[in-house]
Length: 154
Image (cartoon, rainbow, N blue to C red; front, top):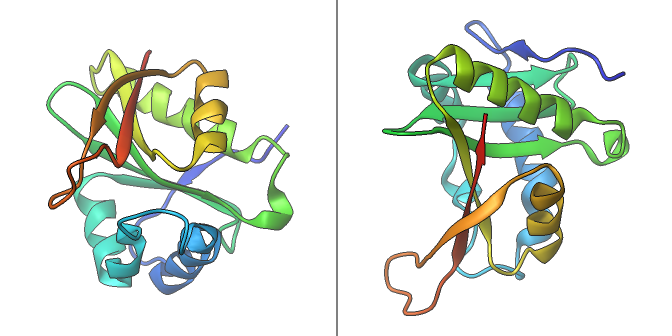
C-alpha cells in the first residue's frame, strides 16, 4: 500500500515540487504541440495554487503530486506527476483516489482532467481508472484538437 497523500501548504518546498513536475513532464518535450504549460509554471504559481485550490503530495521530498482546482461543476485534476523510480507503486492511483475523496467532500459529483491527444498511454491509464472522454478541445491558435477532456463520477 502506498504512503498516504498529504496536503502541501506553506511553508513548503515549492521549488522542489516544481523540479519534480518539470522532471516528470520533460518526456513530453518535442512530443506534444503546443508545449506543456509546465514550462511557464513557477514555484510562486504552485504556492498560489495551493492557496486557491489544493496540492497533495506523497513523500518528503515529494515523490508524487497532484494539483486540485475547483471548477464550476467538477474538481479539476492537474499536474499529476510521479517520480520515475516510484512508478508502478500505486502513487498516481492514490492521488486520484484522494482527488475523488476531496471532490465528494466539496460537493462535486465529478472529477475532471485533460490529456494531450498525443499521449495515448496516459489516456489509456485514465480510462483504466474509470475516466471517460467527454470532449476534445484546441488550444488558442490551433484548428485541430490538442487536448482531450476526461471525467469520472465520484
